[in-house]
Length: 304
DNA sequence: TGCCAGGCCTGTC
DNA sequence: GACAGGCATGGC
Image 1 (tube, rainbow, N blue to C red):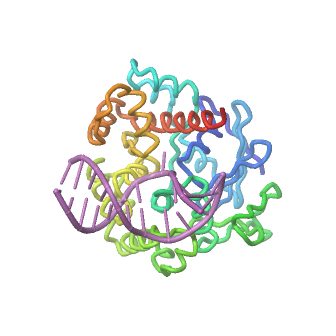
Image 2: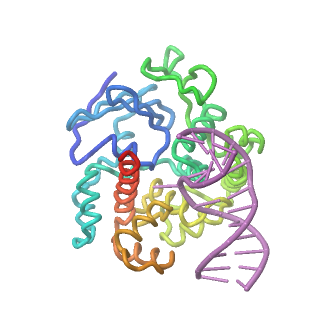
Image 3: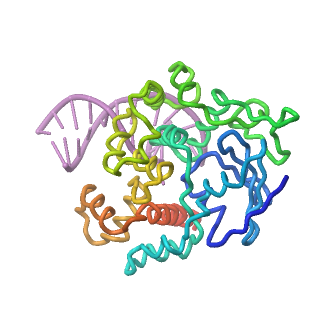
C-alpha cells in the first residue's frame, strides 16, 4: 500500500544519493529502492510529498526517523558560520540534504569496505554481502520484488529477493575466503576481525551514542580497518554525533581550495583543528554539503 | 595498459 | 608527528 508523508526543507534524491548510504538505487520515475532493517522500501518525492511503501509493511516512524524528518533543517543550517560564503553556496545549491540515521553495524561495515574504493564498487560489495549473508526479505506471497527492479549485470545471477544487511554474528562466523568472494580484498580481514570483536563484546556499538564524542571515537578506532575518517563517518551517520567531521580526500581538497587558497603548507592536523573550531555543533551536516558540492563540481568539470 | 579509488597499517626518521 | 610504501580489485 502506497503511503504519503508531507515534507518541507527536504530533498530525497540528494539525501539518498550524496554518498552517505550505499543501498539505495534510483529506478525510473524517480523511485528509489532500498532496504531498511527487515523491510524492502520503495520511495519517491513529488514536490512536498514523500510517497513510500514497504514489504513487509513498516511503520511510518521508521522512515521518518531514518530520513531525519523530525529535525528543523533551518535551525541546523542557522548554526553554520554566517560569514562562510562557500558553505552558504553549497547549502543553497543542495538545500534539503539531510544526514540520515543509519544502523551502526551496517554503517561501520559499509565504510570498512569503502577505503580506496569508488562509490559504485562500495555499493557492489555491500549488495554482495547482503545477498550472501543477509536474510531474504519476503512478504505474504513469498516474494519482495517490485517489477521496476532492473537486473545489474555486474552482480551476476538472476534477480533475487531483497536481503537484509547481515548481522554481526553472521559475519563474525564467516570465513575469510567467503568475504574475499564479496570482493573485499585486503579489507576482508578488517571486516572479519571487527565483526568478531563486536560479536564477542570487546567493542559495544550500542554504547557509543551515550559516550562523549572523543571517547566514542577512541573506542571505534580500536577496531582494525577503522581510523579517524571511518570512525567519524560511523559517529555522524549512525550514532547521532552531528559534530563529527570525516575528512577524506574530497573534503581535504575542498577545505584547502575554499579556506586556504594561498597557503600551500597547511598540515592535516591544522585542517582537523580548523574543521573542529569553525563549523560549529552541526559540523557533520556542513561536511555533507561541502562533500556533495565538491563531488558534483568534479563531475561537472569532467563533463565540460 | 596503466592509473586510481569516501583509508588504514606499519616502519622509519 | 610526519611521511612513504603496501595493500586487492575493478572500472575506465
